[in-house]
Length: 152
Image 1 (cartoon, one colour):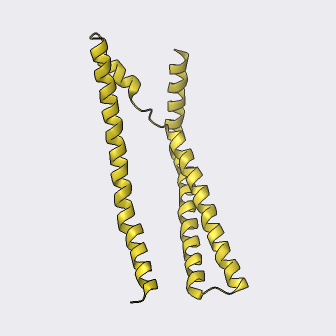
Image 2 (cartoon, rainbow, N blue to C red; image 1 turned 45 degrees about the vertical axis):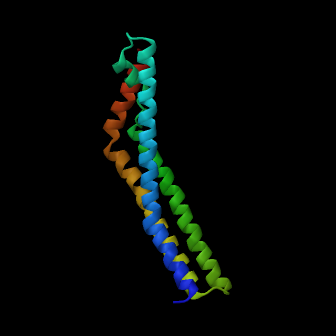
Image 3 (cartoon, rainbow, N blue to C red; image 1 turned 60 degrees about the horizontal axis):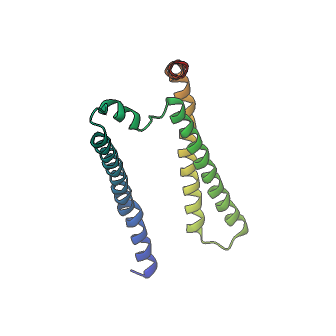
């Protein structure tokens, strides 16, 4: 095995195995730290005032859940970003193919990666429009609930 093959293998293993494990661990650790911080705040509030309504305090400290509309808009945003990234990689591969000077493996890799990213982004954009149509009643109900709570 030459050094290029070893570097390629190590990068694939790092991106495919190690990176997802680290990301999962960091996400779990962040959630545990948030929970621990909330616990310490509640304990400090109870120590200062014994008559503190713990249930009300926990409701106020709970992280706000995203609305369906916000979730769908986030899908649209990521779909557009990933689609444009895929198109730019595809265009870069096309430019390298026309200009020349690059290996066919590099050009094929750019075509494949650009096409794959464009497909993923397009799927997210389609998900937005289908979800918007299917969840229209739920989104409207959430908006009415928010306006009713704001009026109180």
